[in-house]
Length: 328
Image (cartoon, rainbow, N blue to C red; front, side, top):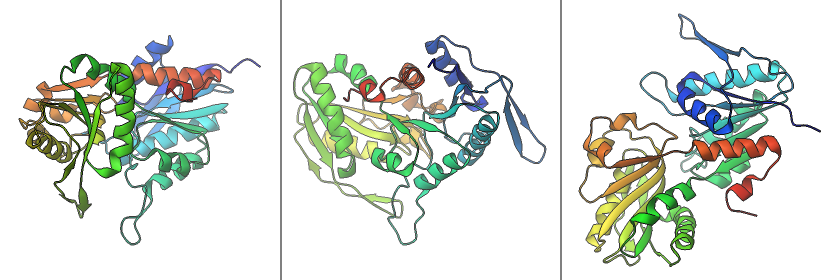
């Protein structure tokens, strides 16, 4: 049977990102209306027929000066529900950045499991599928949803960025033990790209009540180029702490890379630290909080829209997301 027609929407806060995805797909964004009300409520509805269509909705769930994370989440949920009520055949939420993904387990008594609650909200409005990029814990993300949940990684984009820059032997550094699997996957892919085996290292880190402690470094980095890998940058404290430790242990250069650049608090000042040579993130979250800072001058931002557009195309045509991620 022929696939239903594809429709790609992007809510206003992610309009530019969605337009670039649409261009990769050879489409224009589907038309919709968004209307605010005086009391802070909001309405969004499709202006095109979506009956029996395969519909994708782009919304990156980060907070900014105009809308909070919660504002963007509620707007997305209501729009997804409106599409299902308009008889869309399938509705997929495309989430370059997924909020609340860091709270996926209980670390203190009676902690919420926010990542699971997000999944339940998505399912409650009829969302058929979710597509997200580099969530904090992929296993928790996949297990939270009772419907298909596809996890993409920007690992290949980061490897292709770094490969031409590596003159000294590289060492891939996880800023804590919990990120070791992420760093190892990056290290293996980088090794295949370079045709030689990078080293590996990690730092001990303990977090409690917002305070981070721990100083030990495990791994050899003297005279090497260190690449510190994480899933996101918030205040920048973890990356700067790791960069300083790498320098203290003899690293010749220190780069840092993460998929999501939130850059909260005083990240612009922290990331201007001389221990760090450069920082790489993707465009899942615009780096607007670094504008006008020294850190912005050493920042590279990679485009994820080709990756997400390819994933949308594969989902629509019944292709393999695992093959897109280099898995069989």
